[in-house]
Image (cartoon, rainbow, N blue to C red):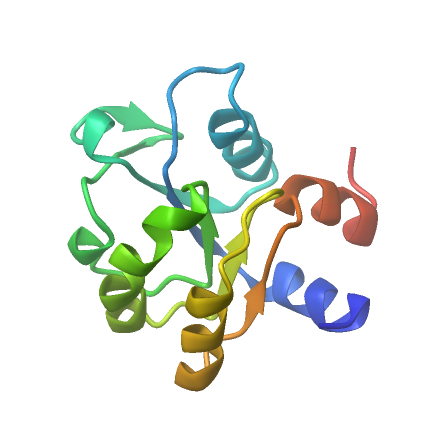
Length: 137
């Protein structure tokens, strides 16, 4: 995906689901979505450990299947070996873009998304790319 395509996704996106969102401010699964939330995106935290607790102004849910609204970007903070177990819910959710954070790659999951027609960014930090492409601190 080109920088112009990524920039277009980021500019038109409004809702970002965060699979593996975390409460600990020192963890990337917290400070990356917090950065995005502070820039006006609606963040939908997904993590069974924090289901029912408020994160980024909304209640966290336990699974992607509990989300009832459209998702522009699905930001994933899960280990590669866990990705295939989430594939059925990702497919049902049909996000506009799946973003695998830095260090996360899984060829089988990536190929399955491609076959399903769901765009993907892998092994890149959404916060870093947002700053680079949209020039926000």
